[in-house]
Structures are given as structure tokens and as C-alpha cells.
Length: 75
Length: 266
Ligand SMILES: [Zn+2]
Image (cartoon, rainbow over all chains, first blue to last red):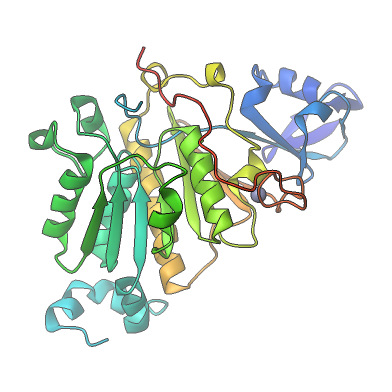
């Protein structure tokens, strides 16, 4: 099936895949570092295993990014 | 507002813009913007806001300038080493544009002082490096309905979104800070200096658009860029009804200082 991940077409060999499996297919190692949207709805982390991504779905991965200061003198 | 001859000349390239004009320039000059963290993001943001003539610029940072900062924190220079960042930045702002009133807070922002500081400003720029402070800024801004720009950078990537009251907040996207061990330390991860410039100038642009009241802000969407491939992507979202701070059943009702060291030195 064809889905979109972060705006890009992606081919998945199955007819449906859990969010969790899709993350590992995309080599996302730390699920606590990512927020996932399925068709513009955020999926709770506890539902990653059960929520299924299907043909033509749009998935967004949003990752934590830190900041500008990069200070090494913060407490 | 009556512009002086010098101001008409200084801001002429703004004033001739149809969507800015003298009214827009006046709005900028009446504007108050607070920059939290005068580092990689805060430096370029402060420069452009000062150049634009923002009436009051607040700077909050408890750090002093060190040599590793100078690769990207462009408001600080080699002679500023060991100087307080807020003082170093204030000096540059005053040289660039004496019209600007610069207010400095040489301290860390905490749950104790944040409301008192941000309440007097029209717009807040998050230029901090650590997640507890990012969430603190978000929660405080949601509580008192204060617009702010979130910014994050890592290696060759950046992301930014703007919060305005009623729209999605940072916690709508990320429920809370990542576990401490999951965040790469800054000295390990690294950052290409100019990435901070790309992002800080986007944040300054959002502040100016907000003050003038033009265009579409980065609300309900995250702009994410990957400078290695030079791709810019926008992820749209809506306010999250499960959001712990702005959702239907908020669980966060007071400000907390979340625990997590931002950037370990080791
Ligand atoms: Zn929210």
C-alpha cells in the first residue's frame, strides 16, 4: 500500500501496519522522542501498537529539537 | 506617532512596503518583545528586531559568553568573553539602533518569575536550549494567553511554531519533556552555526508579523527544515483535546519546573 510519511510517498508491503511497526520501519529508535499524527490527529503513545495505518493515510513524525543557547554553564 | 527625519530614513525600506507602511512601522516601534535565551536563536532574533526598531526588547539569560558560543551566537564577539550575555547583547542593540529600549534580566527563568516577566510583553521568543524551560514558557504563555514563538535546532535541522491564544500549543504536539537519557547532549550532538541563524530570523519574522498584524503566523503547524538536503516541510495540526495544558481536561493547572538537565557537559 501507499502512504505518506511527512509529506513523502512511502510504499509499505502490508495492507495495514501499526504505528509502532511503521516507526521501526523508518528506523525511529526512541519512541519517546517522537510525536505521531495520523491524518492530522495525534496518537497517544500507549496506542502506537494498536492503531493501524492504512492505504492513503498520512502520517507525520515530529521529533524533539532542543534549542539555541546550547550553553554548557546551565545548572 | 511622528517620525523624526532620521527615523523616516532609517525605516524607509519598511515604510515603502505596502503591507507595512507608516502604520506598520509605528506598530513595530510600539511593540515589546521578550527574548528568552540570548544564544544561537536569540542572537539573530535580537539583531533583526533591534534593526526593525522594536520599541522594547527584553533579554533574559543568566549566562556569560564563552568561546564555544561564538561559532553561532552572533551578537557576542571575542572581546565579550566572560561578559554577561544580556549585557553583551544590550551593547550591540544600542549601537545598532538607539531607538530601542533594552531591558535585561540576568537570571534563569523559573516558574517563580516567568509570569511577572512575560506579562509586560506583546510577544515572546523562546531561544532556550532545554526542554523544561521550553515547556515552562509554553505553559506560562498558555496560562496568560501570550503569543510566543517556539524554536528548536539540532545538528542540521530546525523546527519552529507560533502559539497564539486558542491555537495549538507546544504541549499539544509534545505532551511533556523527553526522558533525560533520550536527549543527546549538546556537545555530543553539535550544531551547524548558521542553522541557528535560519531559525532565529524566522522567529524574529513571526514577532514582526504579529506586531504589524500581517500574514499568516506559524500557528497550528510546525515548520521543519533539514538544511543538509535544504528541505522545508510543514506539518499541520489542530489543538489537541488531550493536551495537558490547553485541552478539554487540563491536568496542568499551575507552573512547574520540570526536572531535566538540558545539555550535559560530558
Ligand atoms: Zn496545548
